[in-house]
Image 1 (cartoon, rainbow, N blue to C red):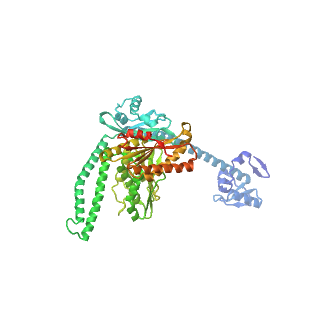
Image 2 (tube, rainbow, N blue to C red):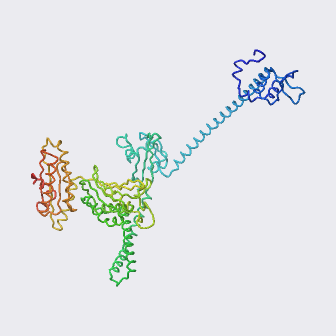
Image 3 (cartoon, one colour):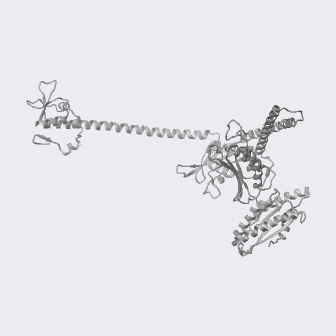
Length: 613
């Protein structure tokens, strides 16, 4: 330190340590105790011990003093402190505070280190505990669990999985891999190429001792949706399936037993309403009509239960024939016309073009469409709209029933095809039902090899779809001809087969394929207006050939069909096809006049092919 004009000057190091907040906070009394200053003889400036250092310096500057006197109750005369004493005492105070701060900081650091060590040990212990708990939980599961890695290798197998697969607990992963590969599980999960694995799926399989295993798998993904592998769950569903079968058989038996007395009640009520038992009063007639309505509803429930039992047992009779969805849709819409009118609902059928025929049971498909339209009207608001649409979609024929009703939430959409599930159980007319309708629809469409699904948004209506697979057109044609031949054998009726062929030079067939396709679609669409019987059929058999079956083979009817085909062809060619070298030809054969063999009938029709114009 150096002196200059009686003022103590701080070095750079001391100034760096100086915290100027203490200039305001430190009291003169602290400096007296720290510096242990000695009393001096004279000082004109006297302050109390509670005076801050800053205020003391300010007063010294104001009075022009180099020292200050401090009153002390234990002394007769004040303690005299010079500016140098005050500064030195302030530095000492700062050093003491710094030491205390460093000591507290070391204590905090030591405490934090100890706590972190304890936490790390606790985390490790907790992780080990959770791992052991998870291992124990997996081993204690009643279901089998197999975890497959990204490449399909087995990463984990629990003991129940080995037991269900017929293995011993000490069998290794190689043995498990051999068994599941024998079942085709990994091939199903990973797909044929192994690059696009299936996200989820399930199947059932019968194993040793007649046990039935259900295997379900689902993908494992991390947060960025990166594939981690697959989890496979294995359950023994033998007892569950036996219980379901017993329940189904019980329901079927009870339903059969109920049908007989119900039929008797229906007949009795009908006879009473017809006056067979005598004159019926108006009040009694009301009760009888109510009983008749309840009998019909009860009969519908019994029929639904029986249908469900047959579907679950896998023995529902399906009488397939070639059908056109458009005709079925039209009949169903007609049957609901009055009901829709009563709710002021617009009921319509929209078909944009010719729909391919399918090979299915017309009564069962009509039942599906009837259920869907009935539900659509039931849940549509007054003044709403219900529309049935059908269209070809790749290898399927898709039918949609759209309504402007209450809609279905995402959660409910997953359950509506379950047995006894109802979208709404509101009290009052219009909403009550057995909850079997959609489950039966699902079963019927599945029997036909199709699919049924729903698209809906709550409050914005619903769209129910079902698809039926197209069949090879020659198979459809042959099946239809066989069915008509059987009918003809019993009734003696005749039917006609018309083959339409577009004779295009081989070198231009690829070039003109699109033009012919447009023409064929035009003819098929128009045929819906002149082939109106359920026994009529229009189908495109090849790129350049179509077949028309006329159920009523009267000469005039066949001539009418021939003329309609010619008219549509001429108009289309003249309008859109110009002078392209397309030579339409028709060949006609009649069963049994030309042949009693339907295969030979096709050959005869093709042999008779002649240019139309």
